[in-house]
Length: 210
Image (cartoon, rainbow, N blue to C red; front, side, top):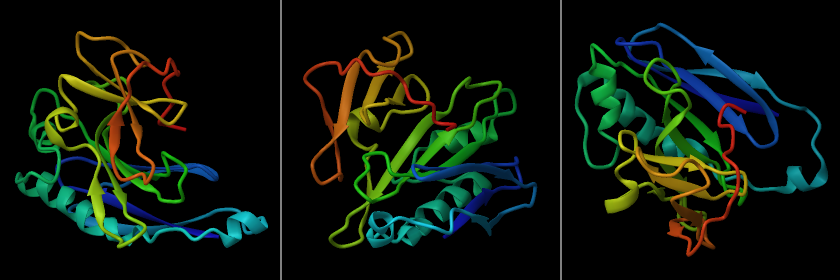
């Protein structure tokens, strides 16, 4: 099957797209073109089993407006409450710049690819630092921001959200516990929100690069 890849680019820095899919190899590409969203094609497996061929995937084109909003924010130094403003702060930083990357990844394995934004590893961050996660409602196709509110809306500077191998998230501060400790969140039954756990899952941190 053919997999469309969208690449977010700005004139300030070269931004990379890490496509992480649960059923195919990852592809990492980058470009130095200014202020554009480009499309490319990557080949996945042409043969599928009956279960995967019958699976109805939610159309991720609903995410296009969010991607364009991020692109505009970084390029024009403007933001709003629907995205993480730190992407603009770090893109404009002269001393500690950091590029923003995004990926489609079905984090709860419910057939809906989440849209995940993160700071790319470099001088500022050693690992991918999640800044925003969006999902799509199967019922009406509405895009929903999962990392919102007083708690999860503080990601990227002093607060970290680590994706764990059991499909939960560890939420901790700069002086708090490492992944697997602190507060733990999981997807609710319909996959449209993150709910705080009563206890630590104890799962290991997942490698977002793979």
